[in-house]
Image (cartoon, rainbow, N blue to C red):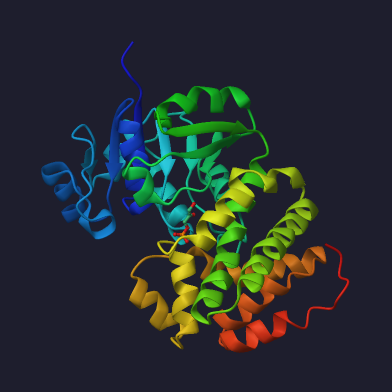
Length: 331
Ligand code: 13P
């Protein structure tokens, strides 16, 4: 039988990296919004804007024709920013064949609907099996071949079992999980904590403060996740604590870099412009605070990040605010 074709939508750093992993295992096409990027990948095997001079597999095929790419997909991977998921999937819906599984790489909530990416997939592509790939996965390290692990979360474990070998590599281990909600929320919520960690870095706080942000940030993620119906244990794994640690610690994290820029006194708009990439936590913070209010969860770290992002607090005020969390609040 012919090998399956994986089609990845979105040629940012992570979409390109996941497409490169898949290209070592099966036929793979990467859809790039900009034709120059597709040409650079096909002719030079590079995506210099996002991954510098790191070589991509020769077998990776890039295109800017989304309808044609979608028509060829046996597996569809969504690697565009959360704000673009709906429009992008609306474009592929007419040509995507029935039953093609769809895997989201997206770690942000949709503004307005407050939906998770897999929910948006379910609405745009009804009837398709849906899942996500998440974990502590800084793209450049994985392209460089450093050991890492991720999780494919699907409701139906058979789907994850079929997808696992398409993305696995000798130094990229892919686990399965059926808690789609918990895995997806982990990736979404850690971005907000990473902005707080970036601010901490910029303000040169102490290691006690850094540890507090990680530990209490994880507690906030778990409490909201459990209230929304996720298994709290999921947050102790790769897609929760794992991704939280990688994103808060890595100088390459976009969300952490936004936090560092805010601590240098830049506005959110200036910080985003300097970054030149999407940091999902910025737009997700106010959505998460709405959810926290709705579910009655106290999220002081997320609240301070939201206040800084909205321009109501400075990073210094945010950290002063975190010092006034009522003592004795449940761990
Ligand atoms: P950033 O978007 O902050 O770079 O997040 C990286 C990440 O999700 C690593 O798993």
